[in-house]
Image 1 (cartoon, rainbow, N blue to C red):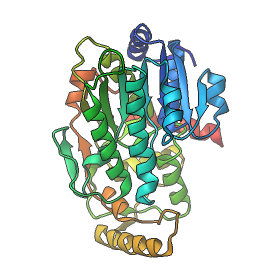
Image 2 (image 1 turned 90 degrees about the horizontal axis):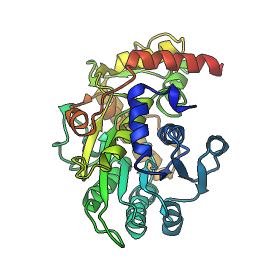
Image 3 (image 1 turned 135 degrees about the vertical axis):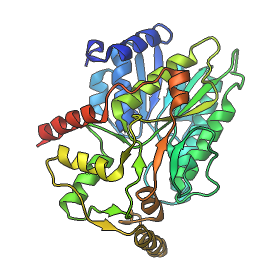
Image 4 (image 1 turned 60 degrees about the horizontal axis):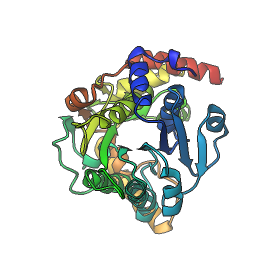
Length: 358
């Protein structure tokens, strides 16, 4: 990949960023979004340090200097941050099932380690990948903006731990660095990232459809926002660039991110299925029934100590039967963010990738 293959707006942003920083850390570099961010930074000639738990030869071949380690280990994090001009903290434990400790250790403790390492090593710019799940309490979210408060309670430890971590990042903004200057932070909330190489949403939809286990929840189709992975990466680049302003308007703030194309969940799922040349999903399950099944399965799995994710949980039942779309005016204003790849263009790229995989 070369910088000339990028959208002109993205290329311009990367060129400006490369003039302001020479070395960055990307945590979760081996993940879906992390890898795309790394590709763009490398294309701009920026030295990239990648922190991930496993080995990723493709990233090493790309030019990323990989460090294998755990986010919850302060020394590993400190060593990775040392000498960087900015940190993209993308790593987190996602998913909908697991113990509190399994989420808090990487997501909250890991984030705290990143903040402390930035302060100790005089790294003044921190871009944090959060999630809209920090505001989700199980009801419709229709066109909400960043004034929406954190949820009073959460349906899983993922949303809860990400909210705790995001609050740490917000509170860290303006903290004095070890020698001189202050830390500037920004938190980004991309919703339902998808695209080629997606290891989460796309394969799950396709696998369930092939197994005849994919169903729509509720009698009413609700609108949801999604974001194509390249757009999510572009927003991270813009946020980093904005933090290098003399008086960054985004410092200490959080931003919802999306493709700015609300779409019904049924339409989105069927677009993914069409990309895989599969028939559309039409069967439905009442939302209340799905939620009751989730309650029962969570209780049974909890009693049995089962680690694998139940086929249904309370969070999934509510997530799939409520609306989730956001007012992204703040990101447009403060970050100059505009999605560069539409849902339809993204689906064409996804279809091509899926065909190449066969």
